Length: 39
Image (cartoon, rainbow, N blue to C red; front, side):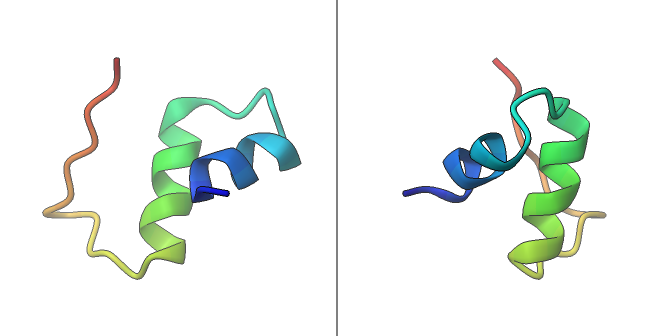
């Protein structure tokens, strides 16, 4: 199961900015240089 699926299973009404922040935090990525494209 992907991280995105895990987050949505926990809280399906999570907004994309919240998902992005959680992914950056959980994956220890510096958000200042990170880019996630929303579809």
